[in-house]
Structure formats: C-alpha cells, structure tokens
Picture 1 (cartoon, rainbow, N blue to C red):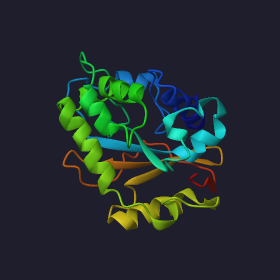
Picture 2 (cartoon, rainbow, N blue to C red):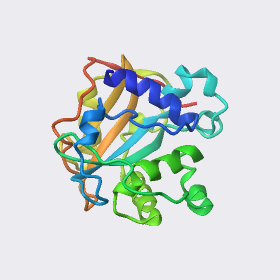
Picture 3 (spheres, rainbow, N blue to C red):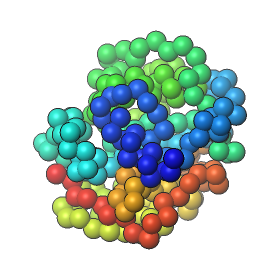
Length: 226
C-alpha cells in the first residue's frame, strides 16, 4: 500500500476515532514495525504529525459533524500524534498496557487534538513507547505544538494556493531555525495532507531519518481554512 493511500484511509479513521494507526507519515509496513525494540524509551527520535484539517473536511464529507470540521473553530493544523521513530525506518508500537487517558488530560488536549478516540489511541499505540508518563507525553505534544512557528501563508489562508513540497519544507525549516530536512510534507496525490516535524529526545529539531518517504508530486494544493 502506498503512502498516499495510507494518508487518505487513516485520516478518515482518525476523525471517526477508529483505533487504527499509520496516518500521514510513511509507508509503514508490518515488517518494519516488527523489527523495532518495543522497550519503552528505546527509540531514536520523535515525529510530530500535524494534519491539515481543511483537506480532511473537504474530501470526507461523511465526517463533517466532526469537531475538526466545525467552521466556527477555523482549524488549520491539528495534532495527529507524536511518534517514537528509529533511524532505520522501524518504529515501536503498543509497548505496554495502557490505562485510559484521564478526562482532565483529554480536555486539555482537545483544542489541538480534536478527537477523544484519537487521544486515547495515540497514548496506547505510541505514548506507551515513549517511556514517559501520560501527563509528560501529552505535555511534550503541547510544548512542541506551541513551539512550531507556522509560516504566514499557512496560518489560516483565505484562498486556495499551491506549493512545491520541497519549498514548503524549507519555509517551515527557515521559520523555525531548524535543519533543512527536519520537516516533511505528507500528501495524497496533489493534496496537502500534513506537515511532519522531527525532534530529538531533547525536543530540539533534527533531521528526519533518511528512510522516511517523501511527497513526490511537483505541487500540492493547500485548501483555505473555513
């Protein structure tokens, strides 16, 4: 299955709060996952995935009742997850039994991660591999989300526009003083689906692993926010 197909399928599942994984980032095969050490805290870096809400809402009309698609909220980038990753392309998952995320933490996360099922799923699948407590894992997500400087043209555009994936990645890197390859565009065909950012365990920007797949289309279409 291609990266583009995964992007489309799993964006749908996220907003419907179905407990599945693999959205937006990579062509994540079962064999790659199975090679990872699932010991909590045993990984190389973090991948923060920020999905572009307007694209999801425009292409999945059956989910228009999702809070992500509420036009009063004007969502642009929303958090899909924070994923432990390895340089060799493998990634740990389901690294231990997971107690449900508390209602207090869920309420704190909903403004940037607008799906209760997604919050629970991300903790069980990825958070348990971080070696962090629930509070610290979601605290990291909040910290990183707030720290990212979004270039002006992506801060609630009022009109559709297009851009080359490499140019978009460079603009995010420059805006954040990050290495050139610290950001990756995720696309589905010619649609802009997400921006992904790579961080070391110290939460500083670093280059993404060379095994990450890239968006190969020459231009992606960026839809406006409501």
